[in-house]
Image (cartoon, rainbow, N blue to C red; front, side):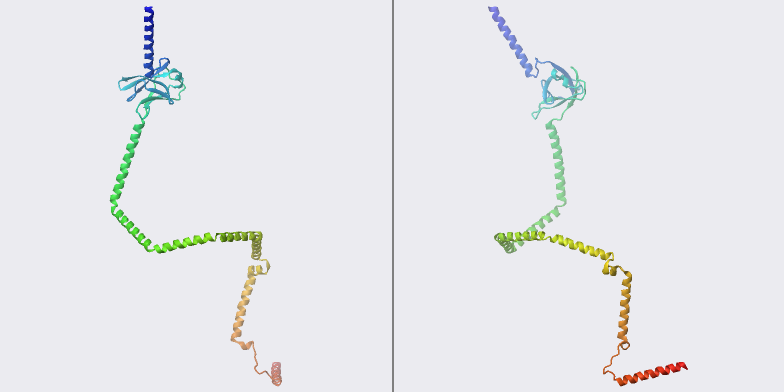
Length: 323
């Protein structure tokens, strides 16, 4: 009976020790109940990385760091990855060391390659270090501060070089502001009157809104009547007819067309006009050739005597011609 109790206590102690050992391993990132594949990767510096640090693939934790060993100028990191993920790791994959967050912890990220061959157990990853977020922000912040400092220096230099012009511009601006204030003060009555007139005008419009609407309605009715009267079509027909007449005149049809397009007729009319001008000028110069005016008239006896004299002269001229 005593031996049986000691056996129970011993067995219980062994179980506690095993469970504790398993718990320690589990807390250290190792699960002894799962089989792992071991891989290696070398870095120049692994600051912040610790044993049991997580190993992730596509953001999923697939293993942990087993050991970190300094080998000459390199640091060898042994990582364990669960064997169920082994088929998802090509042999040209990269183990990238990077920060796990703002708290500064380090993790290893497996970046899958494109090879069709899977990395064997005991294989070696290509090591790469990812710039941490805080360092990147610090670098960017330093560059930003440097650019900002350069900009401020340039602005200060520009202000120093143009201080007189800037002072004069400020003085002109103050003078202009004062002039505007004086102008507004002097014209306050006019401005107030203009505002009152505008208010009166808007009030009048508001009071006569019904009349204005009636006028607009009448205008719309008038435009509708014009459209119904087919005025536009009539005007279009008239214009077409006028265009046809002008076209026929241009082609020489009709009296007007012949008059405008017959050059010989134009020259004849021009010559006749010149001759008429010469005739009127000759009549004006020698009116007696064309006009014989008797103020008191002529008696029959004088006319008969004049005819007898003319007959005698013609008879004498005929006789002389016969001899």
